[in-house]
Amino acid sequence: MGAAMSIKATMLWQAKDFLPLSYSRSARDEHVEYENDEQFEPEARRLVQRAAAEIENVRSAYTSLADWLPVIEANASAMGGWSTLDAGIANVLRGDTDRGHLWLAAWIAELEADIADGGEFEGEDWRLAAHQHAREFVTALETPAGFKQIVIRNIETARAGQRLAPIQEHQLDTLTGAESRPPSPPTVIGWPPKF
Image 1 (cartoon, one colour):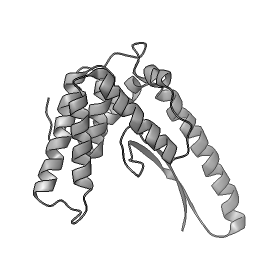
Image 2 (spheres, one colour):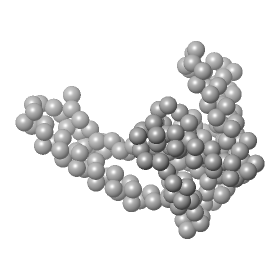
Image 3 (tube, one colour):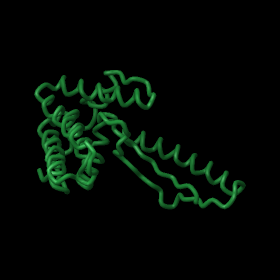
Image 4 (cartoon, helix red, strand yellow):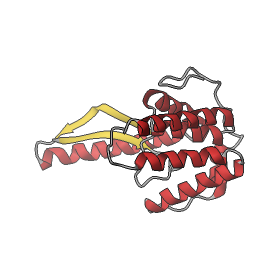
C-alpha cells in the first residue's frame, strides 16, 4: 500500500457521464510505500508538490489545441475507442475537416463492428449512445458553426457536471484560432485507419 503520482487530462467535448482519459503520464519512480503516518506524510506532500509542478509543466507545454493534436492522434492510433472521437473533433476544430471526418468515420466503424458482435460489455447500451453521438458530429460537419455549437454544448455540460465555471466562446476560439501552429501534415496512423 502506498501512493504514486499520475497526471491525467481529458477533453471535455464528449457528452458522457464520466471523464474520458485523453492524456496520462505516470512517474514510475514516484511511488511511496506506506509504512506509518510519520514516514508517509512528508513523502505524500512531496508527491503532491511534484504533481502540482507536473500539472504546470503540462499546462505550459500544451497551450493550444495545436499542441494537443499530436498527443490526441497518437492515443487514437494506439488505442482506438474514444480517443478516435477525440482525434476527429480536434482535427475539425483545427480546420482539417477532411481528416476529422476520417477519424469520426473510423470511430463509427469501430462502434458498428462492436455493436454487430455484441461488444465486450454485454447488455450495456453505451455503444448505441456513442454511435448516435458520433453520427451527430458527422452530420454537424455540414455546417462548421453547428459542429462548434455541439462541442460548446458538450463542454458546458461536462464542465457543469464537474462544477467548473462555464466556458466562454472566446476561450474556444483561442483553442482553435489561427494564431496557433498549423495542423501537422498527415502521418501514418496505426490501429485500423490508414490515411
